[in-house]
Length: 296
Ligand code: 3EB
Picture 1 (tube, protein in one colour):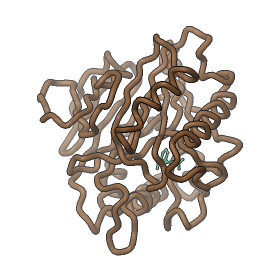
Picture 2 (cartoon, protein in one colour):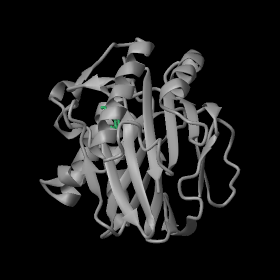
Picture 3 (cartoon, rainbow, N blue to C red):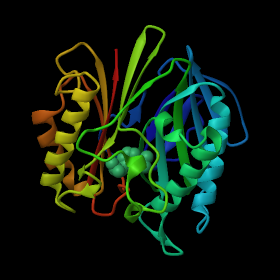
């Protein structure tokens, strides 16, 4: 299966999923599970299999002021579809992510519904089971959630210089975000390392609000730290024969050239699969977020 980014209408090609986030550069699609084949899903849910992996997509119209409700319903559907499998990674695409409805930012309403669904499905100790994730804006009308689950128990990791997102204080919303900074798991002969969307946050605070170069510095530092924690050295396995996939989300299209120059001089190498996307980030003062997936 392949995820295609951009504004063009869906092609309807089987195994293709379109997300309405414009591509600014690099590959306009993401193919982490090229051999994943469609299997029967259900109303509002597409499912794919690749070996023991289950890959899924749930989608529902974003309906202010009930985004929390929408998120909770989608997450219940997602968790039910996983059955006994373990969640490895979740990608969230949220309409109007930085807008407010009834005094609550849409991202915070989303977090509320997501957290309630996790808690009611997994119980009071759900935080230990949370996988890597990302959450950015989409221009589409639907809340879209893509997930990967597998049969082997994964390992979840935290960044020593960031408070776990599931323990953020209430100033970041009435229910904390539900994700780990990274998740690693084996599936057959493959090992997947999913690095969550990573941004300029230390502790729980935004670093260098709305200042791109300093945010890139901080984000690269956080990537270096999480890379160390997952056992890939300081450079996300750059020196090893590992397939690396990066997505770089930019709030401002005009930041593309500076970001690309900076990342090509530090983080990226020519064999990496890289996609630059034009998306709002979950905090209005954040201008960039970077995620990575390593497959070996
Ligand atoms: C952060 O570190 C920045 O809500 O699923 C990054 C990755 C972020 C995932 C999510 C949010 C999420 O808090 C935002």
